[in-house]
Image (cartoon, rainbow, N blue to C red):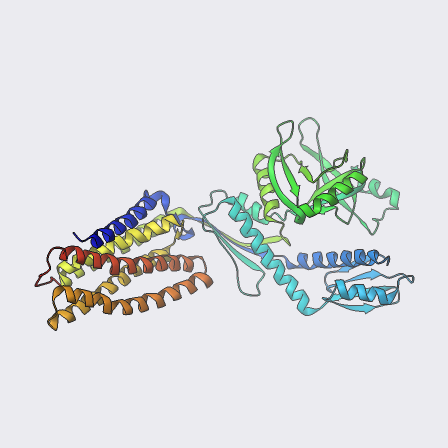
Length: 522
C-alpha cells in the first residue's frame, strides 16, 4: 500500500482515537447547560445610588487630602447624593486661587460653585453616567471572578441591555443556590480603621465625651458582642473610628482561609507591595492603640496593635469553614462597588433537562439514520464512504466539546443536527462533481481527483462564511445562543476534515492496487 495512504490513515486514527478518549465516558465528560442540567437563573440589579454616593465620598476625601498636602486645611464635608453633589467648608485663611487649582487637578468631573465660606461640587451629567456605567461593569466583572473561583462550569454572566443596571446570571448544575446567592451578593468591602473610642455597649455612652455628636472626621460602626463561653452573639458593641481608612480591600494581594491557635476558621490576608510599607509604618507608630477590621460597615474584630506589622493580617469573626472560605474568595475576587438586589430567581429542575436530552438525542439519531439511508440508496457504495465520514464527524465533534469542556445546551443539540446536514452537503458536492467527470469519459482515478479539487473551493467558501457567522453568534449571543455557536463552529471544522480528508482517504484506499479500475459505484 502507498506510504502516503498509510500516513493519512494513521492521522485519521490518531484524531478519532483522541476524540474517543476525550469523550469516554460521555455521561461524565460532557457538560450540560442550564436548560439540560438544571440550576438557577438570577436577575440582579446594581444599586447604582450606592456607587454614586461612594464616588462623592471618595472625591470629597481626595480633595481634602490633596488640599492638606498644599497646606490648605478645609472644613466639614456634607454629601447630598440625591442632588449629586457635596459641600466642603472653606475657611477664610484658605487661598481660593490655590484651592481652585487643586480642585481642577483632582476633580475634573465636577462643576464648582464658590460660596463665601463653602464650595459646592456637583457631578457633570456625563461624568455621573460614566461612574454609574463603571459600577455596573465592575459589578459584572466581580461576580464573574467570584463564580469562576467557586467552580461553576460554563456560567452565563452578562448585562441586560447596553445601559441597564441589571445583570443576568445563569448557573448550571448548582446544588446550593443559597450559598451562591450569598457569595454573589456579599459586598465584601474591607477597611482597616483607627479606633478612637470603644467598644461600648451603648451609643450614647460612646458619644458622651464629644457632646453627643459624631465629629466630622469620624463615624460610628457596630460589631457583635459575643459570649466568652460559647462565642454566641449576645449583643452589639459600638465603636468610634476614623473615616479615613488605613488600608482597604483594594490593596489586598491575596486572602485565604486558615485557622487560629484554637482551630477556629479565620481569614489571613496579605497586602500588595505598595501598601506593605504604609501599613508597617502606621502600625509601628500606633503601638498600643486599637485597629478595627471593618467588613461591609461591620466591625469583625478590633485588635490592639502590639508591634510593627510587616504586611499580613487576619480576620476573625466566629466563621464556619464555608463562611471563611467564601469570605476569602470574595476578598480575592474584589469588592462589589455597590449593593446587589435580586429581582428574579428561578430554579430549573433537572427533570426538564433529562426530557430535553432524550428528545434531542432522538432527533439527532433519527436525522443521522435517515441521512445515512438516503446516501446509501442514492450514491450506492460511495454513500458508505460518506456515512463513515459522517459518523467520524460526530465522534470528533463530541470529543472536541469534551476536551475543551464546552457546554452542551438544547440549541447546541440543534447545532449538532445542523452539522450532520452540512457534513453531508460537502459530500454531495464532491460526489456530484465526480459524476460529472465520469460522464465526460474520464477515468475513475482522474474523476475522483478532479471532483475533490474542484469542489474544495465551494466547500471552503460555504463553511468559512458559516463559521464567521457562528463566531459572531458566540461573541454577541447569550448563553443558549453561544451553545449553538460552539457546536456549530466545532462541527464545521470537523466536517471539513471528514468530508474532504477522510472521504478522499477512503477513495485512495479503495483504489490502492487497482490502477485500471473501470467503474465506480456512485
